[in-house]
Every structure is written in structure tokens, then in C-alpha cells.
Amino acid sequence: MAGCSPPLHRRPRCSVEGNASYVRVIVKASEPAVNSWPKPRVVISRCLGFEACRYNGEIIREDFVGRIEPHVEYVTVCPELEIGLGVPRDPVRIVTDGKALGLVQPNSGADITDRMNRFCREFLDGVGEVDGFLLKTQSPSCGIGDVRIYPATEKAAAIGKAAGFFGGAVLERFPDLAIEDEGRLKNRRAFSHEAFRAGALAAGTC
Ligand code: SF4
Image: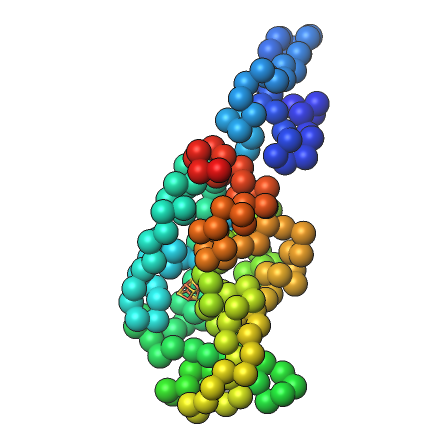
């Protein structure tokens, strides 16, 4: 199969015919393009239809996630479960002292910044080849830019927005990949990333 190595998403389906003395690689260019592409591998927040792992024990049902599921390979992750927070759990929030961001559980006062940073580093080191990320919007862990930041652990008004800890680590590590949150993907105009467009096209949603 050495002759079949164009980049992912442009890779046609190949087969090998012949015997030991003559091997012919056949590229089935006439097949429908979407059906012949390898499935995009997409890391997805686990609470988006896979497990009731939100802080309050809920699961989020998004039609889009299920519709493209046959056409992508999902890798699910829940960073808050992975660092040992149970379900249900005290909610977490991002706080800042004006210099750095921290991740805390206001009810217990626990500072989980280091645990989360360590998990993000280890997970992204070991995740292997991926084509994109589909993450929960507004989550202090999974959000990719719309997460409220607070000036203190105690009750206070938000003073800005940023990416969550996992979402931010993903953006930093994979700046060229398709990275979306489920809020944006409800909007068809957000189908600009190839990994998601491949799944959406196959599912007939765009
Ligand atoms: S948003 Fe992320 S951390 Fe929160 S429940 Fe969903 S997968 Fe877990």
C-alpha cells in the first residue's frame, strides 16, 4: 500500500490485486468521496451524549453529535472525572489574581489547578493522531473561549472570559486542527472545519 499515502481527507480508498510477482494498486477514484475517506478522529467532551458526567449528574443531548457519529471516530474525555472529581460534584470556576488563572471549587475551597494542568498535559501527550475537538461550551474545563473568569473564590461578578483549562490546552497544542464547541456547531455557519464538515456532509446536515 506504499502508493496510497496522500494526506488524510484526500486519501482515496485503495486495494491491492495480483500475486507475488505483480501487485497492482487500484485507486477507486469513482467512488463517492465522502464514503471513501477515513473517518475523522474527533475528541469530544463526554457529557455531550455519552455519559451523565456533568457536575449535577446531567447529560447533554445534541442532535448534531448523534447525526455525525456514524461518520467520525469519537474519543470521549471528561477532564473533571479524570482528575478524580466525582458525580455529582461541587462546580468549579476559573479565578484570577490579575496575573494567572486558577481552577477552584468554591464550595470546598479546593485548588485543582495543578491536577488539571497535569491531566491536560498527559492526555494530550498520549492522545495520538486526531483531526479535531468538539468540546462543551462555557465549561471551566472544556470551554474554548467563552468561560467566565472571576476575581475571587467567593461570590463575585465575572470580570472577563477565557478558554477553560482543557480547552485552552487543546488550542495551544493543536492550533491548526478543527476545534469547535457544541454551541457554535448548532450554527451551520460554523461548519468551516474539515473534520466536522466531513462528518456533517456524510450525515446530510450541511
Ligand atoms: S464539560 Fe468537560 S469536564 Fe464538564 S462534564 Fe462535560 S466533559 Fe466533563
